[in-house]
Length: 165
Image 1: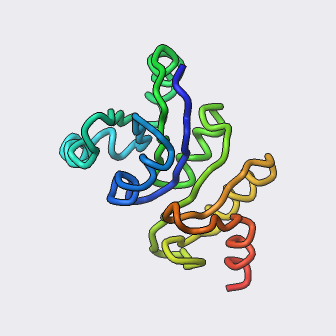
Image 2: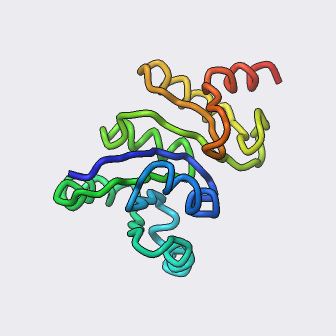
Image 3: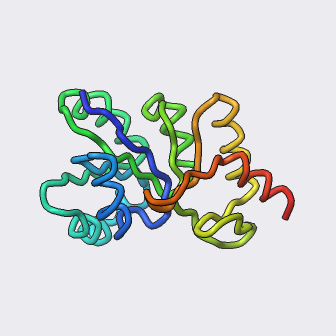
């Protein structure tokens, strides 16, 4: 059965840090990207597939299709998976489905309307904070860490900062 060795939320999905640092750090040999938008865009998929290093399989699924993939195909493999989602809404769905059960690393959430910058690459909305508080209430380990060399920051600290802004 495949095992998730790192769950990462990063709006940029597969990019330099993921490819060069987190794959090596986690020992993953497969990247499972869960994004409804990306699942529908073959052109963008081809770009992400090219970004992965040789020997690392990239699987791109939407939230609905990842359920059967994880239950059937991933269960039949023995991969070490870097589970990558672009946003907290998708992450919450993966947790609710029982796919993600371990620690969650938040590495990058982009800006936009109704979002506040709390640290480097992390911009949170009220909805994000509600999702994060729900995960923390389940006693899940949720933290921010952009690169392996940085010390992880507990998500509760970033929620407190958001509320003080």
